[in-house]
Image 1 (cartoon, one colour):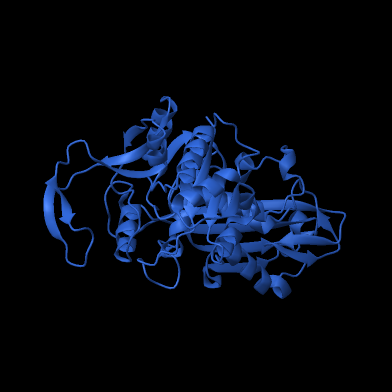
Image 2 (image 1 turned 180 degrees about the horizontal axis):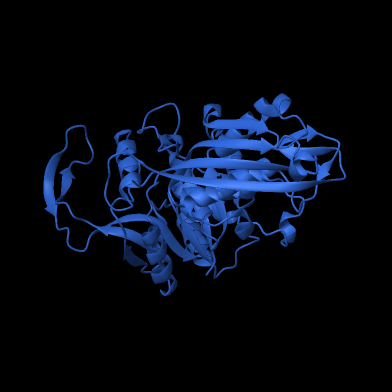
Length: 404
């Protein structure tokens, strides 16, 4: 199946505190928003993602850089509204020329970083078989009290509410594009602001399906939730273990020289007497790096994901490969700890460009420069590399599994 993803992320998070809204809070080596996006960026069934941002949002730019060209191609942003439902409607509007009325659209909160893969699969399977659609939800487990006199500073109990049949609404919520747009439009025209998409459908007379999801798919409300979310992400693999599980992978790439006057190394243009023979830009450093990252994650190799027979990669900037691989890693809750790369060539000289390469690779990976090592060596004149017929690179990558 195919679906579209809409994410309202225009809230200021005043109650959360801090210098930035809660969706940009640091969590397990990334941000809350990136964790929220990861399941969908890593899902080929998700045709496109639209994020609704505050008008004065400048923090998302850094995330866009980390996603790279490949990630950015699958994601658009719009300006959100004062109400959550307005942000959702603005994001839906951005899909007007792309989505058909019967297409499925999912809406997921930017402040829910702990969506489990099993819950997403359950939602997609169950809601797609329902005439209206549905939402992830959790049955109310605690005794519920209604406060007397509203929400004052020191409320008192007015009554105990029977919890039987009560559910806590979670996200994602999944509905047909046309019906969701119409329901939100009708609500807004009546001056009503639904707190979730299901409520808009309810006001239109519909009865969405409730699909039980994990209570760990909670919405971040306070700084203390960051520690809880980190614990959930680490424990998801099946119980918290001492320390963090590490995964190591190695990669290798080689390209023959061809006509040209520069080569790309680590995302940096390096002047040279030759270019390289390649389908993409032939960046051996980034290709070896992708191979190492994929190997550490158990996701095959670069040739499996970016075939040189695919026309979309002709002349492609290899930074697109890195961005796509990082999206795959995030979907598996894997983060980069450090990488070590060795360039093997008689020429060109790497040293004058080493600092720029290191800076660029760190930027692409979203890590500090201290986590990136770049070295160079020759083969002492031996073999095709020694005869200056080409260039090679070897990379080793260490990943942390945030679920353990």
